[in-house]
Structures are given as structure tokens and as C-alpha cells.
Image 1 (cartoon, rainbow, N blue to C red):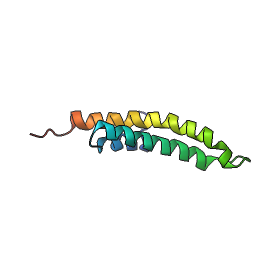
Image 2: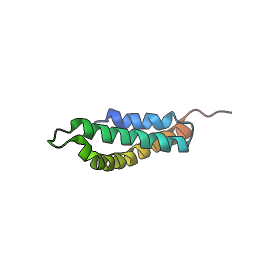
Image 3: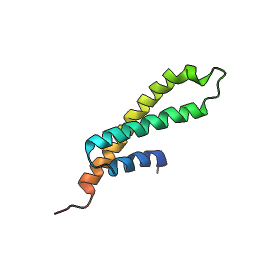
Image 4: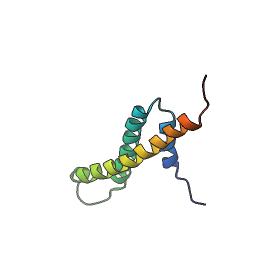
Length: 87
């Protein structure tokens, strides 16, 4: 079986605790962007100043935001479809 990555599980949980789809979109985008941007930034070891790499980091963050949105929407879907029914 494959490894489940704790950061992916975090994206699912983020969506599961959101109150609606709009919040899941926003939280997922922020979560994904922050992870993508920060992981690459903190791992940067080049000779150039990191400020010169911000546009590249922003592109990586935007790409990661898409995955964060996808995971949070799956988490939100699971909560609404599989969670306890009220009433």
C-alpha cells in the first residue's frame, strides 16, 4: 500500500471542518499556497538572494494551491455525504 502523506491528510481535514464549499475553497487555496511557497523557500540554498526567487516561489505556491483546493473540496464532500445526518 502507498504512504498517505500527513500534509495531504491535513488538506482533507481542512475541508472537513469547513462550514461550506466557499470556505473550503478559500482554506484549501491558502493551505496549499502556504505549504508550496514555504517548503520551497525554506529549502532554498542558492547563492542569489531569496527575494529574487519570489516570482518562482509564487508560481509554485499557486500550483500547490490547486492541490490544496482539490483536497479540501474532497474533505468537504466527505463531511456532507458521509457525516452524521441531522434531523
